[in-house]
Image 1 (spheres, rainbow, N blue to C red):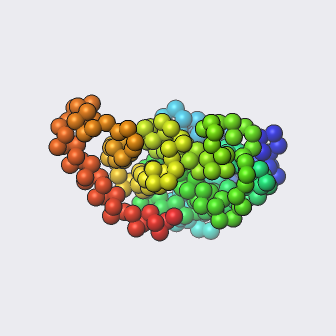
Image 2: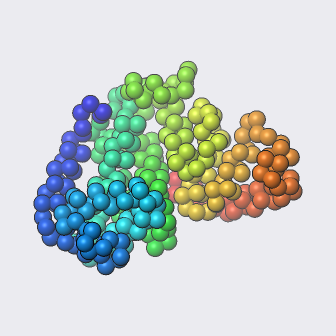
Image 3: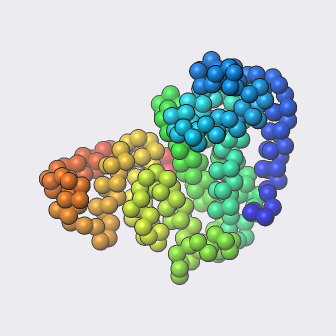
Length: 285
């Protein structure tokens, strides 16, 4: 899928060019951004393509606060706007997320599977994620949350809809831990990327460890961070403690500048919060 772009992505890009050629679409999206105070009139392009490029570039420079602002405007339109506005807002978000979706397509493609089937699955999941995102409840870290939710959906759908394969494509397989059967390493490798994006740095020290109970725990922690069940500090504390070769509490506490008792209490509170949320995680999976 690297060498040849999928037919579906080609169609989406062609459709996007047509949407951008319609001045009315640009006027509507531009008016939403101006009304929300995301952009100033003199700095807001009148072309839809240029407008979206500006939004993405500013998000890269200014960080998640600006990204939350402009994506939030569109997501509110998706969830509460009229059908016509909701469809346009969702389409703008899908186009903005398309590079992420394409990377996911490449990473998920395995021998014996059609690249078009994988593309259909990923893009369908992307539409679902955009249309169902609870922006009123989760207005922060929107871009990261959308990526994480897309990863969760694609991971589930790959298991359910596409038959297991013997090996990944060569480029993807080359990145996997040595000696591991590629088809078995797909999920740990994807989980490692999700954990890294979520801030669980210690979880990705060794991809090959992300299997079995350890893999399930890291997947749960990634989900808990995405849903804001735990803080990054609390999730990291659990992740670092419940692993092979973890330091003793005294050593870990000294590194953090707290007492062993305080560290254990902090971890116990985090575990209790996580335990309460487990039924929701099981239902979501």
